[in-house]
Image (cartoon, rainbow, N blue to C red):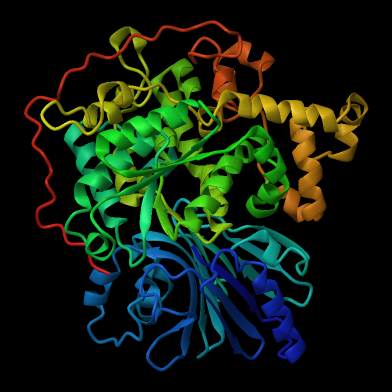
Length: 584
């Protein structure tokens, strides 16, 4: 991930303004420590902090078209850039960067080219011929982006809130799947797939379709010119990413440059569920495994840094961001610049334990739609900013556009959790990779119950956070919470503690409005809380709040879930990857 900052139409082309833009851009340098760039055209400024992953030698930004009339600053990866270059035969490219296609696509197709991009991205494009500009963000919001407005009529764009919060009268999260055009004078939604209207789909479940689509999503993300690895918690999602990567790494450009053996990374408290499961999967796959331990105190000491970097006061996000933040620092110290991660699967397939209580397939499907649409506020925010804090890039194959379209077109009846039929959460994904002849994973890993990341690193992590918050927030403070924080009033001492830290870093009203709120249990939306009346008495985002479902639920009752029948899929051919070429 890189860091971008743009100030557009500020009516100030002075040296003092340039110095200020450079100063603000430095706040994003952790995202891109490899190089800095600044382009100025009159009162328009485009700044870039680069993390060099593709074409490290010549891909510095901003990027230009042939005559330098189109200028682009980009944060992201365009996985189909080689294919797009072939469409642009009459264009001459200055670099080998995957993002170099953007300026040329704009020349050919105007602002409507964005849907042609297969990847994750946030970019600002300035057309100096008429002084117009456009800004776009990827479909789901894997990359972070904010937009703000100054009193002088300027428009500000930044990868992180800290790049613009002190200089804008108002700012907000840039909506995923949209672009902003100065010619149009506002936003336009470019990503509008069939599932967006939340009507119930009816495509029958085909295990091979799911398997092949996800394998392709992983393979295209092996595009890299730098050392990389996979995050491996030992849960279903990260284990599948690691398994597919290990199978297809040989023969790729990445393997020729950095060797055919995959590196994997896991973090947790001593004796945590993730450490044990991650090590087992790593041994099964033959990865070079790196296990990082942290203590509850290590995590507590990092909370302020986490909130500064992740820019939220959401309890779930902070709980999960902290171990990921600590792990990212360790990974970067090993010389690794990019990792593959398993975010997004639970939203697409209804993997959170509260989905056990979905009353029907319509409610189930609509909740998955709501969860995907909100990912940029939660898991994508965490994955992007926790890793970018140390110049590490996270790629998320489950959020591949093609894969989402296939998975979200399934009749949701096939995703419904039915323990009496041996169908646990994410059954359709588990079955798609249940192969007797050439197993992707050991059976007990393939059918391991969902653990939220903040739980899997060790149950005492959340308990320790609550205890620490209770020592710093007293009952009197809580009694006045609604007066001190009328918006998204914290209802626990832990939430109050995080809010105090956030407000110190980001005191503007616009800042607090960027953070989501509302009732939740086990990471549900507020709407899904209605599925079980008992949940209103146990409002906690931890998976252990799913009483009657989680094997270590807060009420202490063990829940026995029937295991699904461990049958292979009949006549399932193997995908060996013939004809797949990874180019950069």
